[in-house]
Length: 306
Image (cartoon, rainbow, N blue to C red):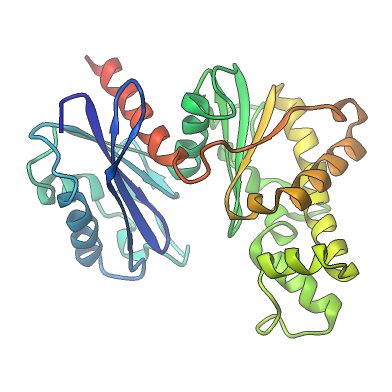
């Protein structure tokens, strides 16, 4: 591995993805790419060991710059977890993960840069994907909930009147309730179960609801149109406020693009007819964007410190 590479760790709630990314081209070394299970409810020590074991496989050079994408709440500058009553990574609340990984990873890194996983996704789409080279972009992921990042020339923006609180669209409100009460895996499953007379515990998951909609299930179609239409209505305000030039959508639900995109567009146009032809793109790097973005971000940070 050369000095022009950046080892990257993408930490999720149930898994960790590790890979080496080439600086400049942002190509992922597929021979290093690995995805392993992660026990988010484990102790801080066990989590550090799991993350460290994955890092060992990347065989970073002494003094290498590493990048770690991890969900919030997290103090990304200090490398300290702020997970309190989140339901995952509780043991990392107040824990200095940066210091622990500096001690655990061998050879010792020269620096470890942390960033939000949704920001990493958006930056990756800016570096090589659907938002490449665009001045102002909003990138969202649709999975368990709604992840988001606001980008100006590839730099995430999380403060100011033009963006959602903390730069997170899931903090927006729809019809007086938190957006994720309407648009999330949990909300969509509950809405379908309620409409179909099923218990939420036994009701189908979102991908099955999508299949049912394609097969002509009117209840499934109405539930998905309602959820993603609500997202579109919310996004109309967000897009106008930020003066975005593009909306990029990734995440597991984006794989049902034939259902997601039309409903979001309809909701946006309902809220603001001027957005009828607004540019909406499916993520080009759905599985790689966060790895690419994390490496790109670390490279920028390293350059700024030189």
